[in-house]
Length: 317
Image (cartoon, rainbow, N blue to C red; front, top):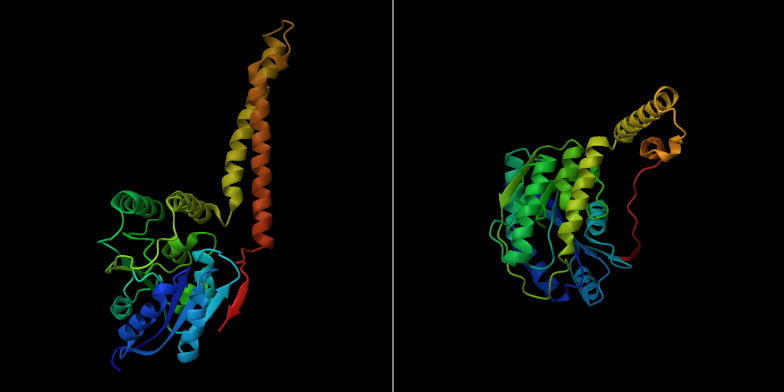
């Protein structure tokens, strides 16, 4: 087959029993005659409906299907991490299971990635079928902030449909709520060739969204975390030591001022502890010392431990 490709499709899901059968048929139709081989990896993130039973039934009928069932809901990042570990094909795609992402976009995205020698390509839902007030506007603000902080010129960081080369997803550690920033994580690992392609967004057919309004607040906090790790993650003492030094310098400066002033100018009976400058100096020196301790601890942790993803797999197929 001309321009054929090998593809792993990672599909995290939570309570999507109504859409799974339709999604499977849609993916098969989209990849038929275009992929030389493919595998579909369903990650059941603690569903309480019949999602896992449907996945098991599909896996018994189709050898291309793999599945992992978590013991409880760990979140989309952990689900993607588990799927990435299991993926074996040359290219790896992610899709949401709610039928809002179109699998028909995948062959074109892979061809775009290959033609332009990209490390990953992200979808852009330019036209969305979501609430303008509660999703569209906050999403635009969130993406603007992400572009400013990361320097990566993507219009839709949180789009569920993306395609990666296998070596990219094997090199990144998706944890916490960092699934929104996989392009940023990849860039920090040296994979800077990041593209974007406009994709169709479908209206939700079944159920309701699993993400609340708090996801944007969490997203901004995660963005700050990424900025800090990118800037100071390898040498935390550069941050904590700098601010600790500044605080200690000012603290010792106030102390020296108080001592000289008491010895040569303020010769009355007032105690140094009665002056506000004393408490400013004391606070600055305590904070400066704590910042230095935090920097040392950060350096020790960095040298002796590493982040790990934790989740309990209940079943797999």
